[in-house]
Image 1 (cartoon, rainbow, N blue to C red):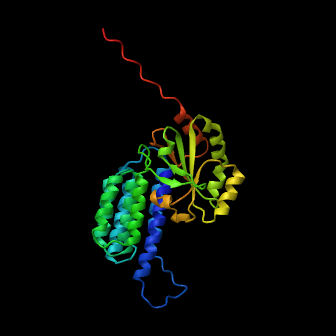
Image 2: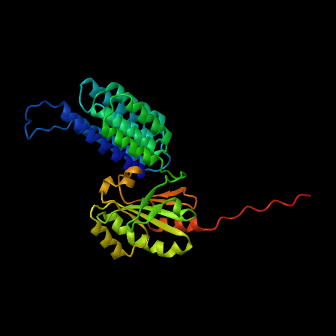
Image 3: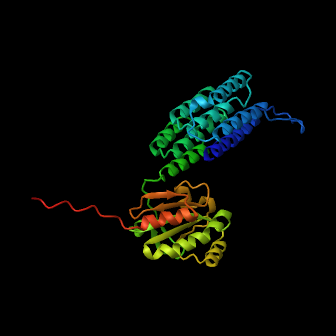
Length: 326
């Protein structure tokens, strides 16, 4: 199911890029309001994606050979659109790249396709979007080193500042993969007290990015409050990082829910300093850290979060002592 959603998301991303490309390629004359401006290619790509999703719904481990017809169809459509100079020509390639990366887990092949887009369609929104999609693929793989190299490569040309910002945010996300240490912070909480990761050493910690206007955040908060009350005496702590712009809205919700753990708030909304530092672009987002500050869970909610906290708090079994020397 997740892979099918990824393909659908990739198609949405590609269509947004296509709209931008079409706008740039369109003549400057005022268009006829009744004129259909979307290329027929869009419907053809959607039909191919639907066939891929139908095959994936059968279950089992996906193999390239199973999708040979759909991949050939994407190649043929891409070649046809390129020959006719259709502004949507790179759309099949973008989808093919997402398929290789997210479904078949063949990241090198996916990156090769994206490099081809930049080579064949330079100075277009598609070329810019290929950098972003490649960064997302590397971020999903937790390849922070690969992302840093990608940013360096992109910045060596004529970088768009907005694209650089997106790439840097994705690099920050890649550094927050399970198994990595959570990057340290040192700020003041809403009471003016020092709030640092180092000050929580030895505790199991949940870093929770949230806002009072966020529906899913509000829905999940009763569960978070319950888990905090249950495990806080055993060494569990939460650090809330709030993305509200109105302090009163945050304070009212905290009081309503009985949230007693420390909060960071700077009133900058999505421009929150810690949210930008860690590349947060959606909420709620949580990171569960073990007693050594290593990330052991990302985006956990409900019973899954409860089980993960309970497991992290269990005493570590000591290795048996070696037998005495004879």
